[in-house]
Image 1 (cartoon, rainbow, N blue to C red):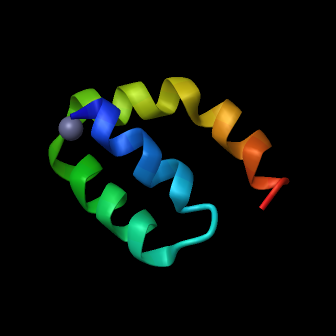
Image 2 (cartoon, rainbow, N blue to C red; image 1 turned 90 degrees about the vertical axis):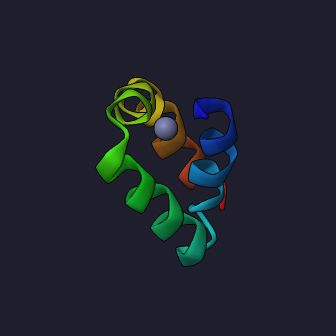
Image 3 (tube, rainbow, N blue to C red; image 1 turned 90 degrees about the horizontal axis):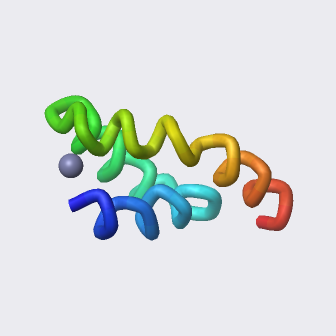
Length: 50
Ligand SMILES: [Zn+2]
């Protein structure tokens, strides 16, 4: 599930729809939330390239 989410979350750099999907999932999935928190630093750095 996390592997499915990561591309979506990365995609939220450019897409509000993807961001919403991921955030809705994170509300009910603590595992993905933790996993994404651990890589959030990398994602934020990538935002600069959008
Ligand atoms: Zn999940």
